[in-house]
Length: 139
Image 1 (spheres, rainbow, N blue to C red):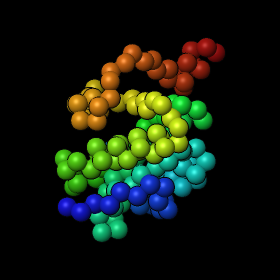
Image 2: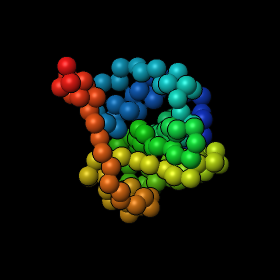
Image 3: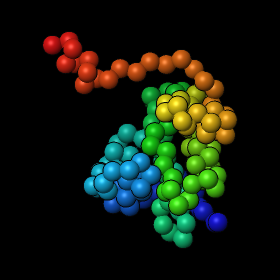
Image 4: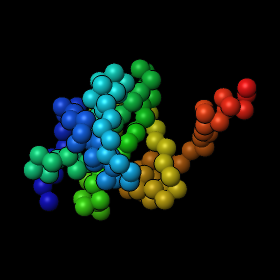
């Protein structure tokens, strides 16, 4: 399997929305990925097999030394071939090249083996606040 990784590739909203739907379930309603990534991401990396987008990850940041992985996705047909790990490694390299010193990721418990064992992240304590719930409770 020859998959090419491309940082900051020209984003096709429909192709990325379709990949996201295949990887996470749901419909492939087009999302304005290109605009979001251009405005908010430090970098993004796509995995392409013969020109078809089969994997994706984005890196957001605080403008300083902290970067954050979001939306790591691999098409189910290409999973378990190391593409996700390669995407994370490429994203980490992009963040390091930009001067970031830390790369953060939040993940569901069933992805612990991937992020902790395969990608080398260390477990940390973190908190999460659901803003829609917090705003309705404070009113």
